[in-house]
Length: 310
Image (cartoon, rainbow, N blue to C red):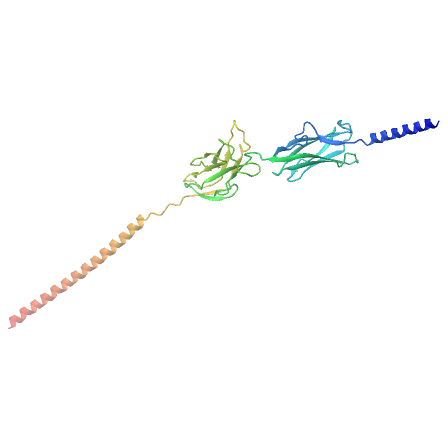
């Protein structure tokens, strides 16, 4: 009888232990085979472009556990920043579209949260070291040294070359990018036709416009637009992007004042004065001659009279 009782007690203990273990199963998280990040390996992620990451919940036997739909997983990075970093477990899998929004990489930590106190709550899963790779030729900007800048108004003179304009290519992290060859950029004005070379090709990441000009008879307000072309053989993130200056007030070219009329007028005045001086001198000389003749005639006449009287 004593043996029977001990046997029953042992069975009950084992049963209770199994029941307790079944009530609180051990969970763990791991990367889903379809995930961009797998096996905690180091990898490179593109900057600013969503990457698919999937985290799955497994039970103590390593099988996918779909029993808890209240679990939410968040992602954070040791340095830098990410977006799209919250996902809910659906059928045992949390799916993210994570965007590395800064150019600084690091280790991504995935943390499980559960409102009902599930055993997985608080557990973490770490990625390897993520290096953020800039997207090449992602941005096109006016060189800081150029006289005209995007969005800024200015005054330009019609019929005169605009100060050289340089357009630069940059990767998504703001680094000058000279990897693209053969890509062109087109310059246009909003309401008039430009003169000069209106198409330039990127060389070492820069395209230079050196002789753009508005027509000599233009007197308007316009804007310059620089549009990046496309290459079928080598797609570029910058293709189709455009830069637009601010309002450009086009003023007529001031013509230099001719000096010929002024010289002619000056010469005319001088000649007039010269003629007046000569004429005045002539009149004075003429008057002196007449006076001398009268005096001589008078003296002669007086001498004749005196001689007769004697």
